[in-house]
Length: 121
Image (cartoon, rainbow, N blue to C red; front, side, top):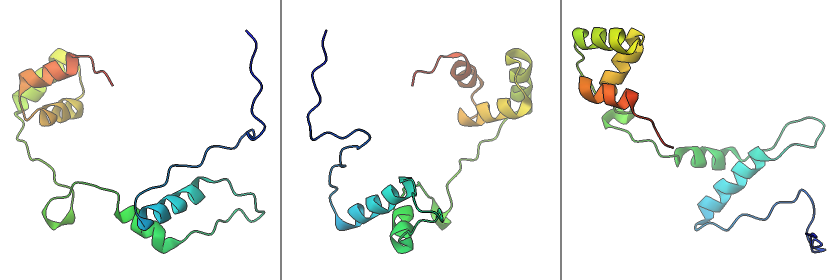
């Protein structure tokens, strides 16, 4: 099967321009991020970056926060016997067994099922 010739306006190594974003702030943040991704051809290796735009872009990254501005963590009481059972039956280190129980609200059955079920991503 023969290949069709490439159009004359296509250049090798040039990617298409990204789609325009909604607000001016979004466009400015995208421009700052694209300058960070670009390879510097200058001899000094330093890049000029608009720090205020970069700070705004970093602030717009969303992280769920609780009261006080820190990431909210759930406190789950874990039974020592449950940890020991997971260590012996699943052959896990204590820290991994504890984390597994905490992620499953201290429920041993859910912890075992979540450990043994295949994950599809």
